[in-house]
Length: 109
Image 1 (tube, rainbow, N blue to C red):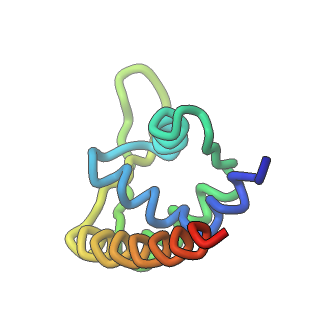
Image 2: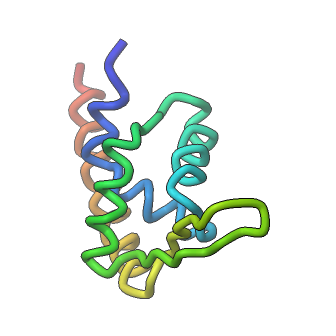
């Protein structure tokens, strides 16, 4: 079986943007939602997730706000920006083209 993590590396930005499109989340909640939405097939390590979040924040596609819940220490909650919604549409369109091309090749086997 192939390694989903290798495939995930190239699509992590798209997946994060999509998850945050649904609602703002902490980094931990993003990783849990990814696992849940993929039926446990995709998992992302902290070593991959947080650099991706920082990159997306630097691009202006997401923003992180520190919040202190009643039950504990401050956590950073990420949300999608207007620029991030635009980028999500562009990334999704690119993914659709790429996946159609790969599927076209695989259908010839």
